[in-house]
Image 1 (tube, rainbow, N blue to C red):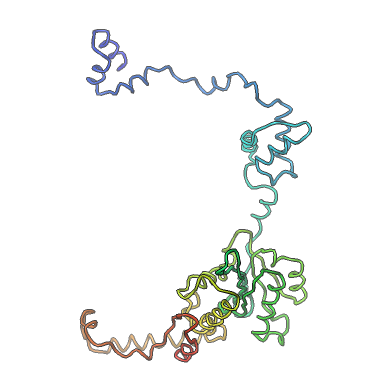
Image 2: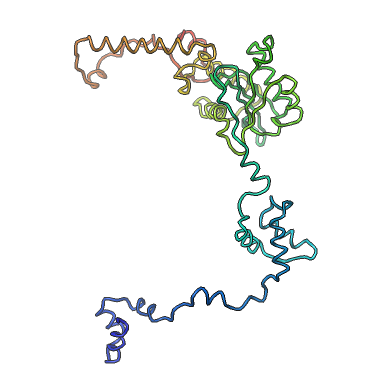
Length: 357
């Protein structure tokens, strides 16, 4: 209707722009309306077949390769190269292979990728106390020398988060991984205990953790080995969070001059971590307190102290005050309050432990 009015107006001598201005219509909108309609999809599908389209036999070969179990782990680019090197050679672009994969619903994870996705998370629900499961991993430590790294091996208890064994080495090997386990068993005095009471192992799928010698080592000791799923750090979150604490601590140097310097730093750090550091994941207790079984008694004492404090406040006379007034007063003596922070290796953790005790 609008187009008919514009046509009548222009036939009467009015310009198209003037007619559009009277109607409040943009000239480009009128031009778009006057274009011929696009052909329907059915008409597009009926267009001539491209001269370089795949023949029936070539398309069948592409489908066969895509569905072949031997090629299940290959990408569309690798499949295109495989087809080009076959007999007979079929020249096809990776995009064309991708379109066939989409049409066949084969563009998602297949082959070993599907198997990896169906690996279940390690079961740790059975863990109820210390020394039942140890979480382990290895992290890089950068040095002052370019392209030279050190490796921090750590084992922590799954329940208490206590670091039961650790050391720094200049290489990441299966022998070192087994050695840190030996050290943990010695530190916890488990060598004299029945092997049925020894902890299980939880780690990622690093080559050193899955090597033949490591599997033989755990099998000989009767230690159950749990492995996290590939590319799933949340399957072993405690050790990952532990390394986060290690590398984000204000005293962490970032660069170590050599292995001896790193060893000196972590001797002091882990002394503080196990005996002074309060962890929110274990009710603001130290790993050593939880590991030694003091957790129920300490929590009961804390609850009793809180109850007594609340009763005392209710019985006391109301003494209104403001924060500004408190700031203006002399600071009270707080030497009886233990210090839980750590300033670095120069700080003596024994002083903190004495204050806490």
